Length: 224
Image (cartoon, rainbow, N blue to C red; front, side, top):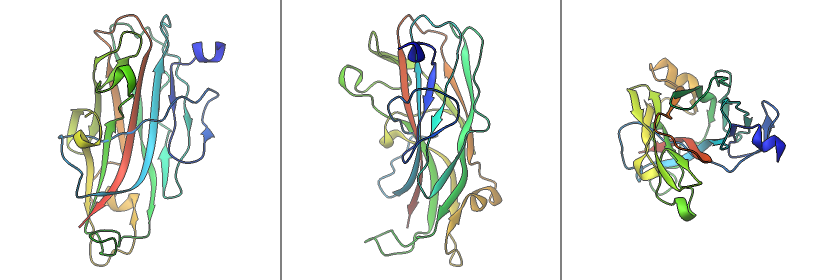
């Protein structure tokens, strides 16, 4: 329990775990981003997950990250920040998080599952915590069960409040798959002027006493 009380946030991704800093793993999270859109026409092919947790009574944002990745993506944790300031009444800067590598070599997964996809996007959203916190977005007070502490994520199109659940996901970046493309990589996005790593901030200006938790997922999706 001491380790938990010294932890401010944790990061995890779908797949096996790799420790970035010493710490204890919390529940998974998901992320999607920018104008609220439906992703029903897109197929998710890879995800990374971020879990952030704050224990009541901690004044310093002593953040611990734990991470893992699927075989088709590599996460970029180099710009994550472990703030040391008092977080009460502040906008908390978590630094940046995203993808340093994308390795999707099967693009014919659209339509009936055999057609070549022509569009790719990176999305982000908060995952529903369920139970007494069901339906609550942002950085959720899990002691008194309220949300409203919004998360801002910066994608290619600018800053936006992170949507809650995949149906309100934000599109962070997009890429048009050409006839010559046989695979999808992070270079495809960056060469097209699209971001693959995204700054994150939390509005903690109206945060009351209690424990806080949020789960974010970033996903790579393909569509016709």
